[in-house]
Length: 339
Image (cartoon, rainbow, N blue to C red):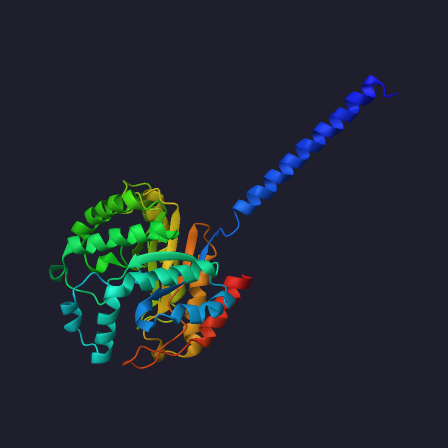
């Protein structure tokens, strides 16, 4: 016959066991809920994807995964009438391609979003600004309406990040850009509940003192207030040497981090890094330029996104083929998968 103390002791063990099972189950459930989350968006910028063909992403998806890409940055065509594209110096076959795409662009983007998600990749969606028009050439409300339309698309298809426009600094001057940025953010947040990133130009590479950066970070909120992340581009441009590039990259990152702190953003993203006119440099120089960006970014814990320019190459009918950047791919693979 079991004594009372032994019964209580046994009950205690059973209770602890049950508690242990519940806690373990909770940990397993919590871990399952986090499957698919990313700490850093290791991505690729794929603007003009629809012009490259409806199967471009699908046919390259395995290659992207093999080099460690976990996100794709997709962009819709500019909100411009057919007549605007006709004024550009496109070969006739390219112009015809654009005219074919415009009526079905939404369907093509949906297919690419679904392809990315089916393969475990995150998606960032924006509206492109290229070919860049002059401010007076556009109907701003038509452009804003397209942005809201694509924000609704992002909401419907669970797109993880949305940017209102790719490099709006190319369209607005300093006086109107902050006002526009806040107005369009309000409209986006009415229909989209994911994270919003400002995808800006790569400004801020000039040397700045620590005192200046501190004053900037503590100053009154600016144009990025309300955005989750400040995105910007970093490019090795003609006239800049590889020896000068590391300091330039570091200056850009520090400047944007100070702005992010000032405007209470979560952090920053390098929404495109590339080399302008890569054919004017050796393959080794191009690859090294990409590596410099990655080397610098790893030193900062609030860099949440790194999107390499399209290094896959491809052929747009009517234009010369763009060669795949093999050596740069090797750099991206090593950093995105190993480092």
